[in-house]
Length: 114
Image (cartoon, rainbow, N blue to C red; front, side, top):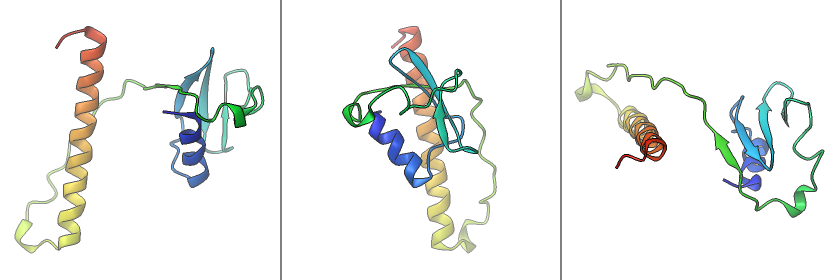
């Protein structure tokens, strides 16, 4: 992911609260309440660097170890569902599968097991 991607998500309001990444020697965290990306020392992302030169620089996303939630069995009456409901559950399932794939890939990378 690049700096420009993070700034675009922030501008669009889609950057998640608590999003954490490493850039250079600093770890930055997004705080949605004050809408700032800062280090533990309160340095803002643009306060220490000239970002117009760094927009295409890659960052390292720091993912928290969070438990993957199970899907609820809420779509039992498939015959009476609307197409929009079916699309919703298809997207939900696809997102959950992708979350699992990312977790497995991360574990594979960390352990070196193939």
